Amino acid sequence: MEFIEKVIERYLLQYKELQGLRQQLAPLNPSASLPAEQQPLVDIDIYNTTAMASSQQYKPILTWFQERQIQLNVNHQAIDTTGFFDEVAMQLGDNHETLQLVSDQIKYIQQKGYTNATIRLSKKSQKDIKLITQFCKELYNYSFVAKYFYQKQEKIIRLTLQTAPTITAFFNGAWMEWYVFMKLLEFVREQQLPVACLRSLSVTFSNEDTHELDVFFLVNNRIPICIECKTGEFRQHIDKYSTMRKRLKLEKTQFLLCVIGLSEEQTQGLSSMYDVTFVNEKNFLKHVEHLLV
Image 1 (cartoon, rainbow, N blue to C red):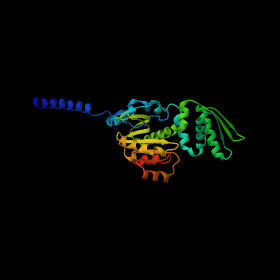
Image 2 (cartoon, rainbow, N blue to C red):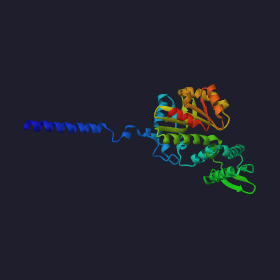
Image 3 (cartoon, rainbow, N blue to C red):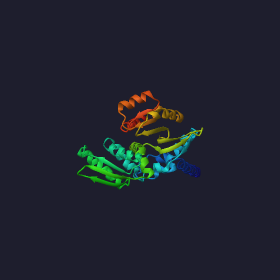
């Protein structure tokens, strides 16, 4: 009887030790097995957050570039969505065919060094007039323009522009970077894909050459996607981007040149001719989906 009691006592002791070891080795929950920076963006309000500017968020990208002996300089302001740049960019990108009239006129007046813009809507449909006037009113509400006035009888919009460098840069093309960045964030969040991301980053190679990249995502800690955005002339930059892709050691499918207004036929034709993948504002997400899902 005494022998049996000793066996049981030893068994219970070993069982407790085994349970203790299991608790030390096992994570408290399945998601704890992944580092925090690899978690999907499920619980983040991507339209109004400073979380993207956290070093933990983009740490995998830093590591990715360090492994290639490339120095990375992060622009934290470019990934802070608490401002209204992303909201206006989303409006402009989703309705570009209609709102291009506004953005092009503002950009033209800015380049001329003036501050007053006039937009004539007499030849536009009622639907387009409603969308354009609402957008311009939104520009005023968000302080992208200093003044907004709509002459309803004449169907003329008058704007007084802001001269702040960030606003000027936004209409000069930065809006498209914001648009692509936010659309990609929406996509990876919907797909619940772990991601690290940056916008308007600067890279310095070992020979001290420095270049800017518009949008860079690292999905699942292993799939890089670099997107350069163009709202104007792009042809003279093709060779530069082809060289950049090779220096970053990216596959052709992972380096996208997103040119607004290109037709589907043009994106296909140019992609077959050059060492980068051409996309437009309508089909770049489709390409990313084929790459990731």
